[in-house]
Amino acid sequence: MEHPIAVIDFGSQYTQLIVRRIRELGYFSKLYQPSELRETGSPAAVILSGGPRSTLEEGAPDIDFDYLLGMGVPVLGVCYGMQLLNRKFGGEVAPGNTREYGPATLMIEPEVESIFSGLKGHSQIWMSHSDTVSKLPEGCSVTGRNLDGIPVALKWNETFYGIQFHPEVSHTEEGADILRNFLDLAKDLPKFKIDSFKDELVEKVRAEVGGRKVVCGVSGGVDSSVLAALLHEAKVDTRNIFVDTGLLRKGEGEEVVSLFGEVGIEIETIDASERFLTALAGETDPEQKRKIIGRLFVEVFFDAVGDDVELLAQGTLYPDVIESATSGSIASTIKTHHNRVDRIMELKAEGRVIEPLDELFKDEVRELGRVLGLPERVVGRHPFPGPGLAVRCPGEVTAEKVEIIQNADAIYIDILRERGWYDRIWQAGVTLIPTKTVGVKGDERSYEDAISVRAVTSEDAMTAEWVHLPYEILGEISNRILNEVAGVNRVLYDISTKPPASIEWE
Image 1 (tube, one colour):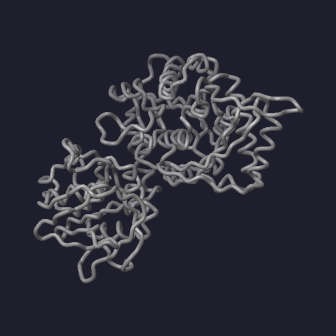
Image 2 (cartoon, one colour):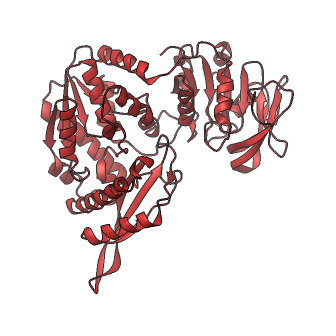
Image 3 (cartoon, helix red, strand yellow):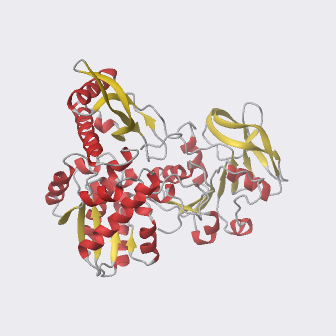
């Protein structure tokens, strides 16, 4: 898409949300590393994100300022981005007395032209920084301050603006309005609608495939189902392979076969459960387990289709790409996604992997699925981790442990559906806690496993809040699991937010 709104990633945990918010406003945005500034082409606008580093540190992330000036487009610096711009324009930044993290109040400077048009004179904003602007360059004006009178919003000229806070997070009350006002300064804004974007994706897939044969792994989840439907829509030569890893939810294999039969997409089923469980035997490190599963997925595909496979299609989403940050990225690697393991990256380098959904967020993929005609029970399904229940089984993965998780999970999900909570939750599942606990069963002492139940709300999996399920529902979940799942004598409810916890335990 021409003239994207380029977001330059300096490593903030919120950077991806900037892209998300811009798309919610109806415009196409894309993330770039600072070194990729020249590769943005001719963007409509540029946003410099926040980041965990200090601009005062040796080797701190930098930007080609002369090139940025020459682009002639509106530029917004957020947090780290604002401090960097202030130094580039000739101002100074100094360490703050304390790190400022959390809510603050924006006091808009009256009679100063800014990107705060139509906003209240004061509103809540969200801070996350340690340095502060100590000296303004000549010609720079303050457009907003906090309650202590410290500048938190600057304007260097008619197209360069900076804000110390994060407009992309929901805690900033008028964040969307601030971004909208900034984008109003731009020309040739790229409209983003998923129905028209579908046509672009279809043409992109056809061009990328170029008549080659495609192997697509399907699981029945939203991402792989939409990918298979997109390839079907593009009428490319595709073999859809469903691999039963033995790490899926209870009865999921039969459900996948039934689903694809309904929408007229042919799939081949491979039962590789024993192979996966054997490969995972004795392994307890979560990163290694993910890599084992990722590598084995590739092996299973190529064992099934032979050496003539030319392309592997993956349902990688934008959050997967960013969260599995590579060594060349400023962001820290949170976890390696199963589809970003070494072998996959080698195949990518060879030009043998296509990831048509890698610029989309989960909710955008759901909408794409609806446009492609997939049933709601597929597109409305909760996200499920690519490595399956292995990431919900800390420690060694065994068939016995997986069966416990499957049985407890089936009860949990059934109750959520029956009580009308499933569609109100982003993601739900159970995790087997890797420790035995003492209990009493049938007047006898038991020493069995504990289960952690988790339910979260989220917009894109980058942040998440735990769901306040009613006590009576939690009680029903606990009672049924304890009574019906052999080997479990304790049920806990996980009330951790992301951050600091991740959604999955591994």
